[in-house]
Length: 71
Image (cartoon, rainbow, N blue to C red; front, side, top):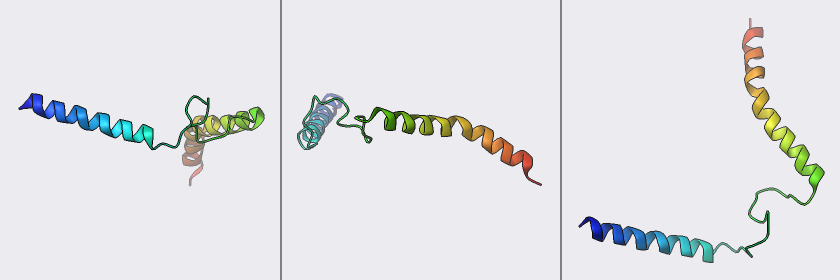
């Protein structure tokens, strides 16, 4: 029983992944094609990276400052 369920699950997983790859409208092999941001402009990428990482690292300090300054 478990072998049959495993076989069906394996076949279903392969079908889903092959359909996903087939229907992804991707040319494939182009670096950065599947990223949600543009990597062709180095300076824009650097600025976005600094803002993204900086906001995440500064959030705990800004939240702590806000809590300490509340009356």
